[in-house]
Length: 317
Ligand code: CP
Image 1 (cartoon, helix red, strand yellow):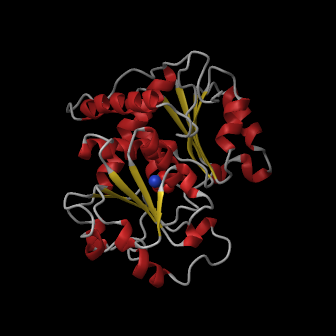
Image 2 (cartoon, helix red, strand yellow):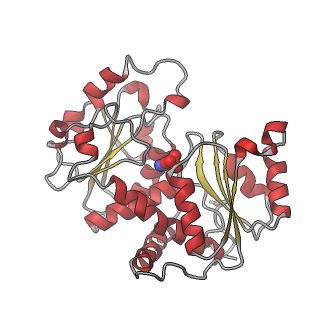
């Protein structure tokens, strides 16, 4: 099947989604990222010249702390020129369309766009629109995809668990509205994780989620038993229409990760969260800050993984 992310040589031209990407490409990015973690640990030499002379435009139509900042750091470590478009003070507020904005940034010689948008498909639209030598990275579009988050999650899992083929992994919470969960499920199944579970109330699961290759649980006690990795999700209140839940307190009672519930997982289980966290809603502070948590290492690995993605795209011309 034709994949709009790949060029005619089968190389990654854009990163829009983990869906449909072969294991070879995912693994190459993780291996490349491992090299960049070593660069960061080399002391004072933190830069490599792989994107020297290239201009990376961060275009975020939705708020972000982790993704935008780590993309900026990653691009600078690759020696790129980085422009952060401030959407709040841009001409978008005067009615300029998304594609007109992009055309104007192309006229400023953009080589790469990192795009976050509330509309699913926005990054695909831009990728179809721009000249072939320009790459587009989806930094989160609606509830559709967040591929670099999934890749940094895969990197974190491989870092702590070494292999994918022997793992039982639970994704817990608001799968329905989560672009992160969708991208994680595609990546985990492609990389050969034999058992991916989703744990959520029926109101927070997409219809037919089983077709994505996951086991469905509605009960934390059953779903967390003997898992190696627990991946928590935030309640995406900004994407909910109407009340999907009685209250945040009720949600925490049944689906919040506490020490007691985590004890059902394997003794050496790791706890992940893409952020931002809502403490006391989906996760207890004692777990978020506890010895099983790898939530902050996820953020740090995000720099190396984004360096790997950008340098891969820059090499695929
Ligand atoms: N995980 C994530 O996308 O966080 P930000 O919204 O802060 O970028």
